[in-house]
Image (tube, rainbow, N blue to C red; front, side, top):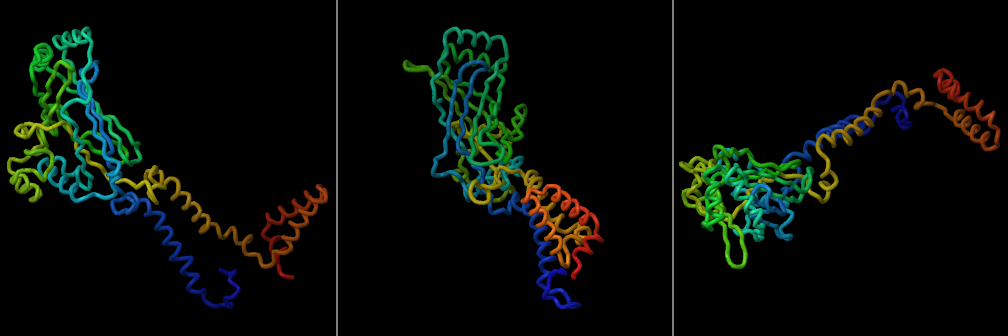
Length: 390
């Protein structure tokens, strides 16, 4: 840097200057390049589980009012979750051991079980004409149960609310049982492979796990009951539990606990991936297992970048900073004539003369002086002549 007046002629540049122009600039470039990757990686301290605050599920015959409604709302004191606790880690371990197809999905996920009541929150109100139309449709077509789950989560760039639909087709034998239940008040029917209870909560989206209703993979059997008394008509829904004694791995059987602790090595006859293997499990109220990834927190540094994806972060801040650094480090050969003048006072005086001419209203003189200034800056030789020490 030839502007350092304190450096003796012919002396080496100070180490401080080399550190500033070399190592420090290298560190800045590395931070700009790798900060977004670290921020969105699992090593980032600004990440927290994208916990789910509420789920609401409705089940209805296709084209009618809901026969079942369930709601689970997390307590405000428990939300949002900042760390993955030991209970979630153990639950993920138990789920991966008994359902190997979910092992990669539950890894580093925050686990929640959102359970409902087995009885619907609302009564079933349907007019006699609609009931008659429903019975006719059950006799003539493969009518569907429509299940819709609305999910609200605490964080995530893809939005706070999602709707997840699932459909269950009533084939001929089941249709006849439903008709009998509606007309004679038969107590209950079993619906094999009724729904998939596993939800994957990614940072940008929410979707069901990779289930297969035709084979029963990651599906769950349910039991539907129609209750009609003097006060109201309502429905009851129960489904098979995740483990033999319920959904809590702590209350699992000794054989199941041994399977959990072995990481899958002592799990003979405990692959619960298909619903057929769960038909000796308890009947429990409907539930969903939610596997949530970590996302940036709302407060602090995470709050600043929580709405940005990694592509957006690179496309704005990093590229902008890169362009600034590029301007600083390139083009010095073209700028040296303008930035390294030995005696710039004559040019400063010319600029001040232009200012005075404008102030006095001598606009013709101002234009002449401005044209002279532009002519000087277009010629490196004239710049040298004007800025040479007298």
